[in-house]
Image (cartoon, rainbow, N blue to C red; front, side):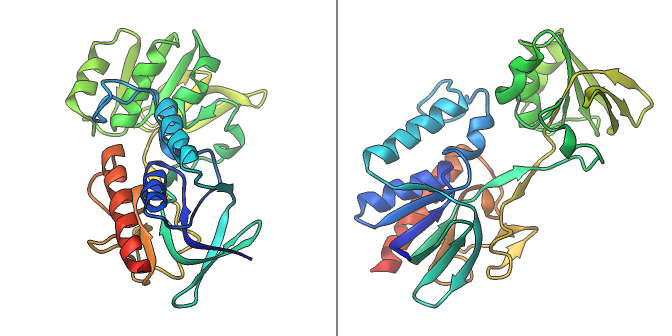
Length: 297
């Protein structure tokens, strides 16, 4: 069984930040993730509110951070965490590949996209349904697509797709958006974006196992080849739900970012908080790491 001082579960912004601070303090740290480093920012086409960068795309920022962890020789390992066993001063992280013994743990597992919940949604992922415009947008060049959602992510990705696609329908269940005004004004002025407010997606229809059109609750039917869904996120806490205190699925932490279990800390999008931004994730990663350092001493 592998032994380390601290396992950081999640290699997103918060996880990589925490790992950098831990390594620089001489802590034997292992970074563990079931996906590519960077997490959700890999799905972001353009970032314009992170200090130090007037504009940068998500994958580039993620790669910059990962390069920094590599420069510090922080080990990165693939694995899906299935459960955590609390042995008091030690914890056992059970993954689908092995078990890892650690003195402390930082959970930075982030969130995953919320689904519409329609019957054929999962089967059409990759066949017309996507949760990442930046990843899949070019597959729909000069075609008609739908973006579902009303927050910053939905409007940002609608603007991104409008530079690629023929028409972008923006479907939102309310008559007002939950996005920053700068994005709302851009949406309303863009000639290729058509707003569909006060309505929801009722059905996704398919032809030859690909999206062909959608029907809305207002009775409209839109002929589209792509549906991009941005209706929120769900925290990745299934592996810890029987051990740590949760609120709406999010981990509850104190001012030191420690959970109800001594030695288990959490940061980033997986915790219950008011603001989910790259800048807050960076700060929380640093705070969690500094408190882990104190805990280990």
